[in-house]
Image (cartoon, rainbow, N blue to C red; front, side, top):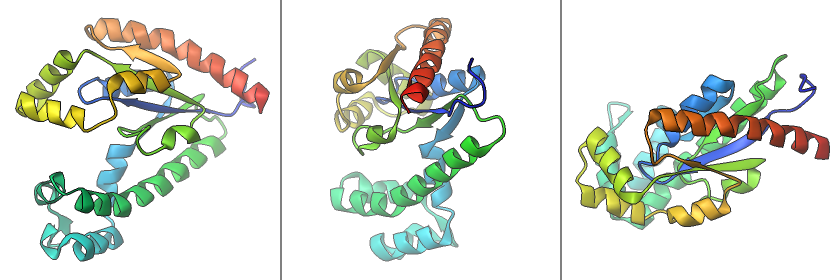
Length: 213
């Protein structure tokens, strides 16, 4: 039986730029997972006055205008400055980490907890968060497919998309480290079939993880 005594399986979901992890997260949610989106939490973090004060102090008061973060100016400030980017991450990431765990704990305490809690984290392996997960899922697609998707949705030049991809852990290394790999080289229908195969595998992993304690 997969009754309420089973604890939720905590899954880390990631993928390189343009791979389609947000689409996979949406499909997993449709199957019954709770999705906690690290990018969405990062945006919420910058609404916190304490976070804004830290950003203004560490990176410059001009980034906070009338109590709001100037996101474009902040992106320009940190893009080619690793030290500034590290400072920003050092402010935002702890806030996001605390909030992620709060949401996870609250979901697990409900009378009818979700069978799977998915943490959608772009830099899952780069930040070492994979170690805190029961299982990891990586979404993959060929580089040119990914570049075309990002160009179509954002208008970024292809060379910038490739540069952003090159700055992350290589897709092949992410796939090697993952417990499950979702191939998103095809269309939406193909992705739906991939996730439909993934879902029972996650439920099986949940039963095994619970039995092992």
